[in-house]
Image (cartoon, rainbow, N blue to C red; front, side, top):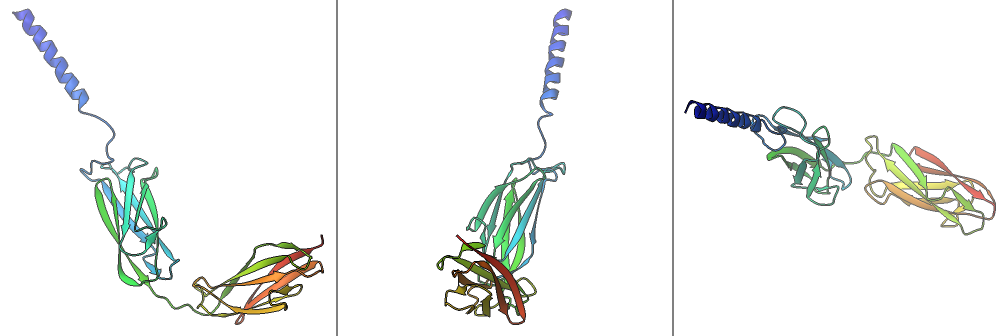
Amino acid sequence: MKRSFVMFKAVLLSLIALGVCGCGGGESGLNDNQGGATLTLTANPTSVNADGISFSTITAVLTDSTGKPALQGTQVDFMTTLGLFANGAIRFTTVTDATGTALAVLYAGTVSSDDVTVTCTAGGLTVFAKLKFVIATPGPVANITLSVSNPSIIADGISSSDITAVLKDKNGMGVTIGTAVTFTTSLAVFSNNKNSYATTTVDERGMATATLIAGLTPGTATITCTSGSVSAIIRIEIRSF
């Protein structure tokens, strides 16, 4: 009887030890949301120009119950009441990186609002960020950026290159649609068969375009774009065959 009791006691102690070992378990954190898991959400900037192209970067940071970053690859869902995310929808799903961070880019539409709400859900937690979409009035031209579709064309009388000008105000906002722009060239002609071409900006980005057509004379065409008191220069090579 005494021997049976000793065996029973040994088995009981073994079971208790197994139970203790089994309850410690895996990594803390990711989705338990117990005892301090956190989700924070910020928007930068919080005031966005409602021009259809301006945007705010939405940053979510998820930590587990120990304060460490949530496991990389945790799903994060964003939703907005106005505007569109980079995927062209009001909802955007991504995952956290190694720091527990997930990003979404929210583009403003052309409708203003003082109450735009972005909702973020991750790890069973939900948080909100507030933004404003505002209608801003562009200022006068402060900067002109030029680019060309082809920096080198053949002097054959038909080859061409498109010149694109982007006009911004001092805050980096595209100037008002219809702002006057003039292109001039030192060589070849524009699509109007002249060395000067007058046009206007055509969209909210402050864009204006002109097309340079090569003549039969090789050389370097210096194109000047002017609007108000601001100008910019770009060059196109017109080369022999």
